[in-house]
Length: 201
Image (cartoon, rainbow, N blue to C red; front, side, top):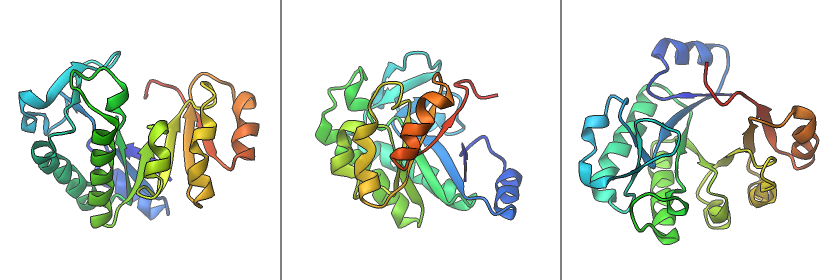
């Protein structure tokens, strides 16, 4: 299984992965605006919030405005289908826990995340829940698997067990810990974790 960028990965690379028997998961941000994406001009100013810390050119989105944001995300999901993605990884789906510039609530986030999952399933795409640990009990039935960053480093892995209990996979990545510090726990919990560099190269 390869998790690749929806926009930046060429059709030839996706076709090559499939030819090698790989499952292709396509990443896109569902909760933030990125000024370097080809569809950046589709986002009206009124749904753009505060900048994301440490991520230049990226701003939080007002996920309550599904009537405005929906067609943009549907177009991204349609692109995933057109490029042959098997699954999608919507990122930044925990805005309600961050300083977004909007008064987002847990209920707002649940509604938006469920909408994303429903739209993915309508296109026969598998969809993973990225982080958003506090809402896992409410969302485990809506998503097909979970993807986590650094739950071992922050001692948060227990929150992911509802996916395992439901017979669904938990994938993850650690950036700072050495493999000896997290692999035994990940294996014991039936998680699939990797150690990767934070900066893509």
